[in-house]
Length: 91
Image (cartoon, rainbow, N blue to C red):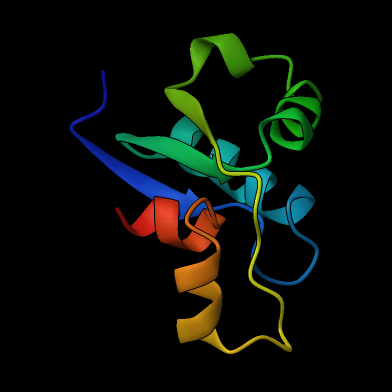
């Protein structure tokens, strides 16, 4: 088991969730850290399935089906979207 755990909003950023999942897998492989990926669980599981060693890594998925768009007011979006990936990851 890892000495620490980080939560990552896997749906935010350019090329998400593909690039975010790849980064999380790399961190789990090379560092003594567990990673919790937060976002649309179905999409995240599909991305994780590309990594054959996934079962041996300290990776978990937390379903958060809502996202905050680039054109949305952050404060308003977080009030209206309680299951937004960025909010759930921060909790």
